[in-house]
Image (cartoon, rainbow, N blue to C red; front, side):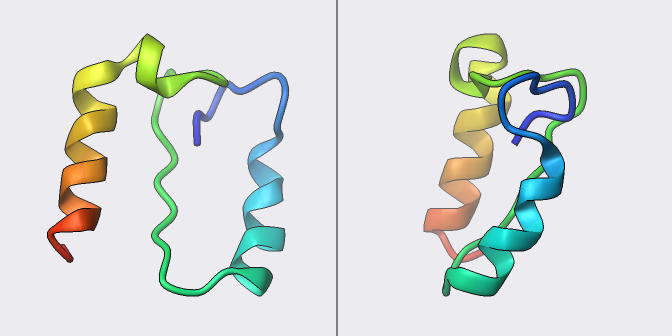
Length: 54
């Protein structure tokens, strides 16, 4: 989740927390709605950490 996302407010994280299991929320600084394009290296790092169970 990007902290500067203009499409989905970061406040939506609370809804996800109530309805999803086995997830990890990451709010990326200075990132908008498409973190995989805006900040691909950091996004990939978060994906890899999640998949490795960290």
